[in-house]
Length: 186
Image (tube, rainbow, N blue to C red):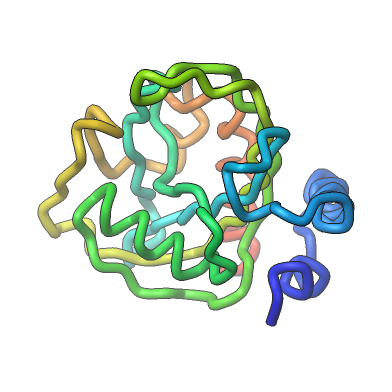
């Protein structure tokens, strides 16, 4: 199934996600290169909302550019299988093997990325169209991280997931995902 078909199939959690879904579909209709950083206006990336087995904590990495905590994820770099991207990014960024809880898109977000310097090169401001998947990992396993991308990795409570130490534009995404998880448990 193509990325566009996956997005079309996605059932938004709320009005915010409905608008983001529409935005993503317009993006795929407007640009040919939505999966690569060659599209300097913005591109798709993939993230993982990784929970522990008890669904009481989530995994975050300390992002060097944002200087705050965020869920693991990364650029698609041309790969259309964004679930595969999410799984790979978690392993690269945390050292953990994960279990996929849902093969479908679990959440969507669109985030403004400020211009910044990465590896000595200036990256202009752009938009990240983020497709989020729900994964599970053992919160007793040892964690590791890559210093060139992160200053750390840890498990946090859902309460901490919307606190001041989280990347500001990701806090509402965390909140929506946690609300969605809680509704599923009922």
